[in-house]
Length: 129
Image (cartoon, rainbow, N blue to C red):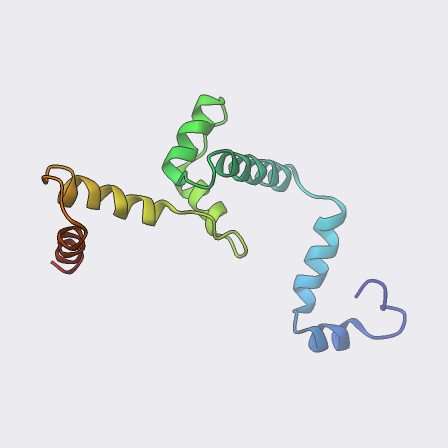
């Protein structure tokens, strides 16, 4: 929009691109001069992504929080979860991690070695009951 402002009105470009004018002006203002809070948030997001990538995409929000604490950069679990859940950042596997941990501990860990069919039945029973 910035490149074409001399040819078209901001109102018209915003309507065609389906963005709000206020959002566009907000972006223009803060893209040029980001606040310290935005810079800190961006740094934290990069750090969270780095920890996630270093863990071969296995760590959920709780483990990432522990890593940040170990690095003397604590963050609230909600902050980490929000960062990981932001649009385009669907890399939090904490739900799956929690489910499979519970499955292992509650349904499989203390059972004798099972055949494949017995395992399928145990998993199905755990999931459905």
